[in-house]
Amino acid sequence: MNPDVHERACRLIDAWHIEGISASEREWLEAHLAECAACRARARANQRALQMVRSNSVSVSPELVSITQARVHWRARELRENQARVRALWISCVLSWLLGAVTAPLLWQAIAWVGRRFDISQTIWVAAFALCWLAPASGVAAIVAWKLSHATGEVNGTSSWER
Ligand SMILES: [Zn+2]
Image (cartoon, rainbow, N blue to C red; front, side):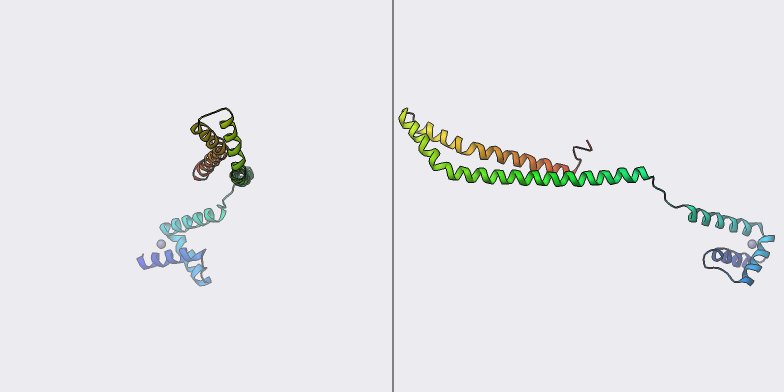
């Protein structure tokens, strides 16, 4: 058989189920397939492949979908809560500093009075004042810094929920 005949058959087989072929082409192809095993095998393989492509819809289990949705919602809520917590810490830090600034003169006078009253060395009561004034704000600042590094770690890697 002329090789051009098989080539034409191959072209028609490929076109058959995709773009379609004319009635006369189809008639010619069916006649060729009836007598050519190689082209018949090719036509069958083509049809099987097409059936697989058409029937192969990706199916995802509803359970997986709901679990994924729940995880996304959970993570979003966790991130929102973290932001709210960090904001609250910043506010308390600022309030602490403001309160410290406002009360500093009173604290200074009180500690100076105690220092003079009990004849304590000035170095000691000045150090006591510094400690009293800096301790609360430093504590809050340390907590904020720790929280921020913790939150950044969660964003970059794993959350406490995934661990
Ligand atoms: Zn053939």
